[in-house]
Structure formats: C-alpha cells, structure tokens
Image 1: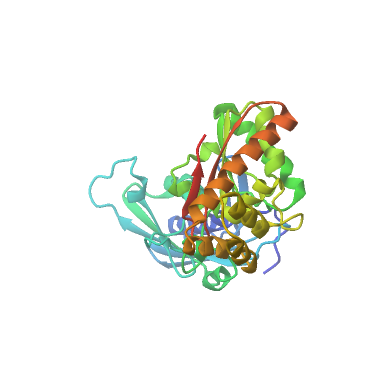
Image 2 (image 1 turned 120 degrees about the horizontal axis):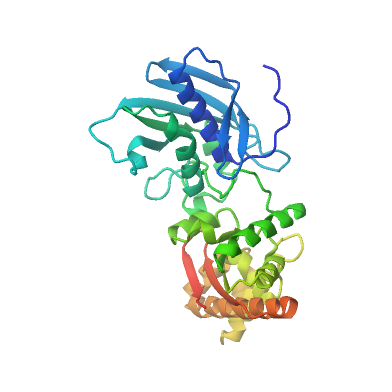
Length: 362
C-alpha cells in the first residue's frame, strides 16, 4: 500500500469517527472501495485516509484508520483504530431527539472506560460521531459502533489516564479535531484565538489546564462554550482575557500545575520553573504548620505525595485552601498589572484521581 501524503495533525476521535463512517458507507455500498472519507469536524472539514474496510455480513462491517497527529509529539502516532459497526432493526418508534437510541457507542479492547463502566468517549467525540454518522443510518435501523484500539491498553500505561479514572485504555477526548501540542510555543496564538471567540458570547471563562482536565470539567457540568485551553501559558492568557473584557476566569487544573501560580510562576512548563514542593512547604508555614511538617513535604517527590502526607497530618484542607486563595489573589494582581483591569479569578484544584480537593469561589 502506497504511503499517504503528509496530513495536518488530527486528534484520536477524528480517526475513530473516520473508521466508523467508512464501515457504515461500505454496508450501504459493498462494492465501494474507500481509500478515504470526508468528515465534518464541526468547525471545518477534513479528508481522512482509511487503511482497510471489510464487510463481515449484510449488517456488520469493520474499518481501520491510523492515527496521525501531524508534526506533534504524540504516543498515538500510527496507532490503528478499528471501528466495528453493526446495524439492527429499530424496535418501535424512536423519538428523533434521542440520538443514543439510534447510535450506540461502545468501548472495545483498548478504549478506556470510566470508573462507572461507561466508554471513555467524551462530549466533543460524541458530537463528532453524531454529526458524521447519524445521517447515514437507515431510517429503519439503529447502529452500534464499537471502537477498538489494539494497542490502547499498552499505550495507556504511558499516560496518567488511570490516575484520572480512565481505565483499561485510551480515551477519546478533547475539544477540537485538530491536534494541538500544548507545549509548542507557536500555538499560543491559537489559544488566544479560541479565547477571543469564546469571550464574545461568554464573559465568564474556564481555563482548563491539561487534556485530562476536560474529563473533570465534564463531570462538573461546565459547558464547552466556556472552556479555553491554555497549555502552560496561564499568565499570557489571563492578561488576554482581561484585555478582552472577561468578567471572570475560573482556573481548573491539577494542583501540581496550578500551585505554581501561588509562587508567582505564570508559565507552568516544568522546563521553565518548578518549585512545587517549596511552594507547598511555604504554605505549611503560612498556616502555622511546624518544621517537621515542612521537612515531610520537602522529602517527598511529587505534589500528589505532598497532598497525601498533609491529609495524614490533618493539614491538607488548610494548606490547599490557603494556596487556592493565594493563586486567586496573585492571578488577579497579575491581570491588574499587565492589563490594567479588574477581573475575578476563581480556582478549582483537583488531585491525580480527578477529585476536587479545593475551590476558591469568586
């Protein structure tokens, strides 16, 4: 098979949907040999290569796409994504708005599940499936789509998915079909563009730090229309929000990232500055903790271990409450200094399991 030409980078949900669409098209026209499918990515279109399609019987087909994140560093590069699509007769009347009864999405091998056993297919990915597949499902049928990632379980061991409650594989998450490496400086302008568009209709924004933060945001029922991805550029984007007249920003992120702001570090890349344990240790002193507690914090290796140690010592609530207050205060001062406007900044800190450990409301 000849290699495909270079592609722009796309996220994992795009290739899962492409494989499912190819399988569905082939069930309608078995003779059609697809090498690619056109997808509606909700804000633009894309042509996605298809590796293989097989019709297993008159109601079942399997298609395979390969993940291609473009020039981005991504462990899913060339990962095969299988979509097994099965059509079944509709049982009685189905209300048009109940999309889940027409299109059922399942987690096969290598696609993660949440702690409650649901497929780890998040809001953007579900919308992508619905937009591209629902028009193709015959009116007298329902479709079950099982997504399989043969390498998913192994690849997931190299991520923090399990710590965030995504078990047994990779997740289909994100808020865009375009793969955006959150550490590449050239994408700061893209994040600014997202912010400028969203603040037009929502003056109260939520800065979601890290891809896994989206699963926490969904669990907290935060609307996608308010979410702005930030990468590590919290300072620059806080100022941008102030300049574009945002009324408030809620910072939502893993505590080991966000507490850097309490130390005046507004680019959270570990390549620029860290000091997480030192910031937590300083907070211990500020809430009246003793020198032995400070030593205990400085002797662990991670912010998560420090949090657990403070839980044991009965100081976690006081320390992280103080840190959240400090993050809020420093962020508001930062915006005032560089944008010369008043803007409220709230904080939600969560742990490695995605559990909220502290909130600082507006």
